[in-house]
Image 1 (spheres, helix red, strand yellow):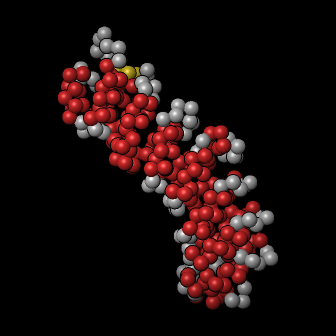
Image 2 (cartoon, helix red, strand yellow; image 1 turned 135 degrees about the vertical axis):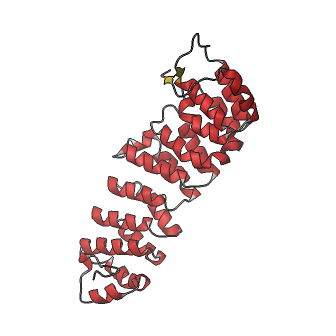
Image 3 (cartoon, one colour; image 1 turned 30 degrees about the vertical axis):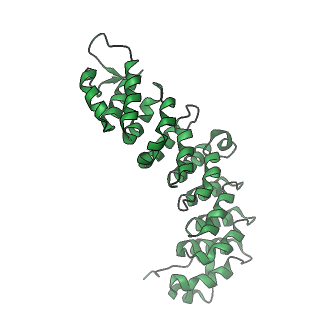
Length: 276
């Protein structure tokens, strides 16, 4: 039968059988010695094994080899740090998002998704911005991973960073920021006064689900104001996408004001839409 906790081929040695029989926590100490092995593949294998165990005692050793001259060792250490709890691992991952190897940067960002720390918000927000992301290989992956990490941080600073991206028409990853904000919509109600002035006919379609989830009379009033500026339709027919989006948001808002207004808005069929 296969061992419950198989040892990487790079760790084969006379004591291999003992490591195979050990409980994960008991295997940490011998693996900590292996991260300093002269052979790079052994260091990488030890880092992989420590990451699978996920014991915080391994953090400092992994931080040490995260600066290894061999990229594959740095990558293994970074992935392992993403599996470890604690502040030491989180701080190391913040530094590793600037590693020269693209795979290491992405592994660090994905690891930060497991470490939702408000202290990482400035770094993540910068990486989600095109100007910095362009300077990193794999811009879209880097920005998307940074936004996903921001979405996992329940703090006003993280929500503000995502809102800035969501409401910025120049941000290529604006839709990703909007999706990251959807689970936090109820926390955005205090920010409605800052959000609504930046909602326009051009971005309301992308923002419609978020606005509907935020809900409330203030959102409904702003959407109804936008609707009032729409040119009247001369004849029945397809509904412009922006108009349909505003109706969807109003329907989701739960606002009495919206519910009173919608029946008098012409009973538009939002399932038939046209661009514009």
